[in-house]
Image 1: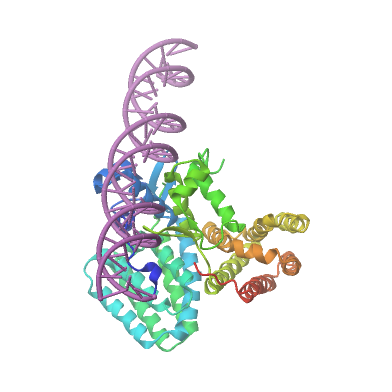
Image 2: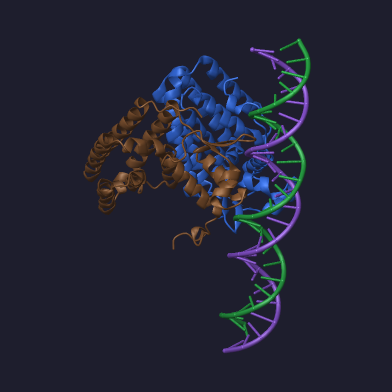
Length: 220
Length: 220
DNA sequence: TGTTGTATACGCGTATACGAGAATACAGTA
DNA sequence: TACTGTATTCTCGTATACGCGTATACAACA
């Protein structure tokens, strides 16, 4: 038991609601711009509006929904500009994390990461690829020694998750992405920080360009 | 009027409470580890617990307070490790922002930034130095073109604000800090990106070391 | 027909109320 | 005296209720 503060943490209704909503937004069930009526959600989940309010506020903090007093909550829509901003940040943050983590990364962790790649290849459920993709990336950064940096990276993964999933549902992109993942692993095994960072940047840059080219600009 | 979504935004009680609490935490009125009882705060502010709950959730998202279900909210305490993490992130984020912003930064903005420095020198109220310090830094990054990056930087400023204020209340540190600020401005005027980034990193690094050396580790 | 004023309804923010869980204090026993 | 079990209290999470602002639709007038 490492952290007493985190032990036996009761799961509040609000957190569970937030999880469900986050997933529904990520997998596209709730499209960008969709109005999130507190009454509707309360009725649908079978709880009162209060925990739903808490959940919405949490999601707002994550940048996934936007709340306007008297106007309510909407699924945040990202235009091309925001997607570019997020990917630019991911490049910055993840490259740094990789630089910090790689020298301290055990071979075991690399094996684990490679296992995740195999699981992605074997996974038939499209909805899970996004989550596995995140696990793979975070596994590589786990030894970076900066917990806050990891949290930021995870938050940006979540923010872009639904768009990345659209990418991943394209089989062409997915095989290319997997190839780049394996390049990345290979560079990591050689402990070639420079090359690994270069591959990572290329990987993220291509993802961003593919998304931007797909013209996913949406107005909320 | 650029953004309709932000216009005529009504200020909710929760937001005002959050602002007051944030300032109280930043200026030290509420020390790290202080329990934030919803009932107490509600009585003190003269509102019910609901907007206080919302405010606390917002502050939790900013990393200023931590909430545990059934145990309540506490002012988040930072140990030396977390301070180092935050300053490491600030170096990464602000250096990038400066790199992006400097080529596009107008002389007018530099003049404005320099005005802020003068105001810092002239400001007798210690409590305002932290805010002015933030204004100065953000003025330099304003042309970076990545709104999300700026938000992240501001968030990390807020998170570290109360510790930075302790630094600034030390007159020795403050004059050295101002000297570095002026070095930074000078490098910016020469449009010397490399030198400006180097000065910025030195500036942040010294701040972090001074804080760490002060041994501000606190347990929450 | 187009515009403006008003009424009604919808949804959010806030207040009050209740129940559950945890912490603490006290008493009883070894 | 030390430890354990129980009861009480404190605080939070959730439910319900109310008031207000905003939006929308319909009607009246230009």
